[in-house]
Image 1 (cartoon, one colour):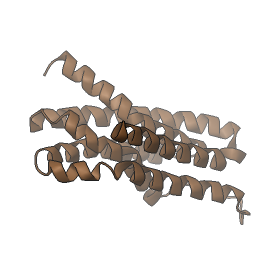
Image 2 (image 1 turned 90 degrees about the vertical axis):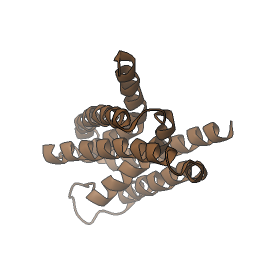
Image 3 (image 1 turned 135 degrees about the horizontal axis):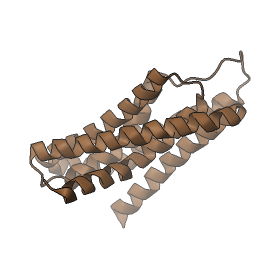
Length: 195
């Protein structure tokens, strides 16, 4: 364990957290009066899944690597379907006639689905860290989770700040962002798989 290991883990965390950052931004944008407890909870949830997926991938590399390789082809489809569903629902909610003037809030189920969708591609990081022993892999994913927490916390904060200026369009913009992230994950992973 040296400086290069920490630097690589931080850079890996930054790369993996970009989708979660965008979703956090959209959530903050949509719910600009989000309490700090939910703000911290959301960032923690995204960090947890972003750290959990690579360690699951690492376990797969050391146990059922051939079966995991087959699953890798489903990752882009799962991310696309989950994010398109949540984003599509937000867009629908924007155009649906409002029954009341209450603020739209993102529930725990939607947050869990978002966390899974934005972190599922991190399963393949298990291959990247496959040569690490278990304790080193745990340190690496802890760094990834910490980086993700910080980035998501900043994303929600920025989204809340801008959300106050564009509150009337927040639901629509947030939904479009989520659908776009789903498409981006899908296209990127398909190019990687078939290039």
